[in-house]
Amino acid sequence: MTILHIAQPVDGGVARVIVDLVRGQREAGHRVLVACPTGGRLAAEAAAAGALVQCWQARRSPGPSTAAEAWRLGRIVRAAAPDVLHLHSAKAGLAGRLAVRGTVATVFQPHAWSFAAVEGPLAAATRRWERYAVRWARRVLCVSEQERLDGEAAGLPADWAVVSNGVDVRHYAPAERRAARISLGLDLEAPLAVCVGRLCRQKGQDVLLAAWPEVARRVPAARLALVGGGPQEAEIAATVRRLAEPHRVRAVGDVPDPRPWLAAADLVVLPSRWEGMALAPLEAMAAGRPVLLSDVPGARECLPPQERARGVVPAGDVAALADGVARALADPIECERRGALARAHAVAHHDVRSMVSLVDALYRTVVRAEPDARTPGRTAGRGNDRVPGRI
Image (cartoon, rainbow, N blue to C red; front, side, top):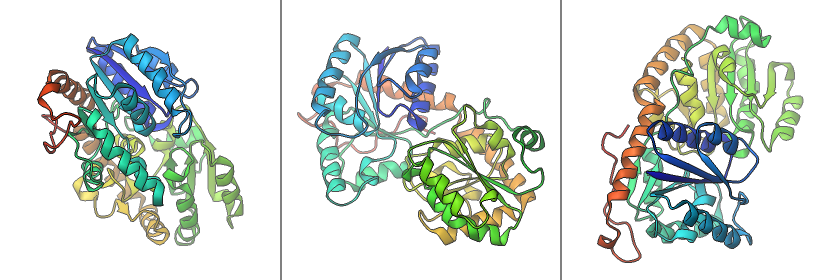
């Protein structure tokens, strides 16, 4: 097949998912193209994975430029002549569906619903758009059952597919904690919580910092590392400086490889405000580390069944987050046991090779589908059409 991925944003989890798909699809012999803006990591990494990269300049948010962005995208699609058009995240989903309007077999993958990130009239407008535009996608691909349920609750009459996110469990293999801490210049004995993620409102590092004084009170030797860069980097750094004991918290910034920090951790924390299914917890689990997550879409589903009670806390609940982190850091031996359980679950259920295989199966169903058999102007209404062998 010829597969065209369209993406905006070009960093973070969306970019990593696309690069993983490109790598697997090229290994399977498909012709793969990626259209995305310049800058960020996606263009270079997709090209290195074997994709033909097309420059599609587009802003992150919708606005007056959207019509021109959709027109330019239409030209790219016509030139590529794909069998499958895969639209990633809200902006590509907006411009791509406007450009093509169902004339090419289209898969839309929200990577967390846009209406979860906003409130009030803007959220209502976003839901109305998604209900209208769903007619122009042969499948809406969700990364968790909860993401699908949230779409249904918003009134989207989509043809649904659910394929959980995956990571390269061989790349994120467990490593020795002591060696990692020595390489990073960390205290060898201090209990360490690590948060890996883009520094932005979605990922909730501000909530974790609000909880940290209580963690430090209960576990006096505890340390925290914030790994990642992003638009709130200066704001996060200022918050750290205002802490009573700022030396307990290390803002690492963006790193090319988070594996040493995962290996050094006793616990990996991701206090997101919204997600579809975040990759950072899957990477931590593959590395043999337990995780504590906000109870957002994808969180419970990515955990081993034994961890679903203590592995999540309500999103935005500072007290519950502090209690969960403190309880875990107070018992490093139990963290080690939980990490082994997490690794086994990641290998069994979140291997990137399974994700690529299931997405390939999904593409084949949408290519075989007969557009004329659908009600004019609508692609949905047949319920949750899951991919066979779904993770």
